[in-house]
Figure: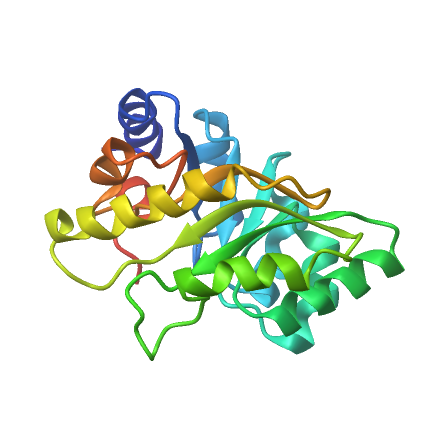
Length: 215
């Protein structure tokens, strides 16, 4: 099927959730095809790759969804509307400083290592409360959501992790803090986005189901 046909099928399945088109390794022409088909948000994994093609991409909301290295923070703040992959206190403090330097308030999501996997980035779900206290004074970042990448298990087995994320999301929405306004729960990818939606995702990140398998 074409990119347009894939987009239309997925958009019908999303109900009220938002679609992030994952455009890692995808050229600007095919990205623009997805935008013309109805995609409004794209998600890139690497700052440098996005910088190389961003000028050729049609207007849309631009999210960084891959791990952000410290030496790429300045450029990421310049390029992206949302940084979904905030995975340490040091990183969010650095984003705040770089955003302040260009008079920007950077929207970010907190990446949760919901499976407590040592090889993955992100906060433990039990660390979020302390983190909120630590970032209280930051003026140039707004925490707008949570994101996770569950363990690599069968799609049905991801359900328990998505349930846990939804519980955390509901708790975070109760926080009364100027720079915390949790509105989005980003979870679910091409193989499990339907389950993620059933468990409360407000945003899913889909790549191969739109563009086909990457080379």
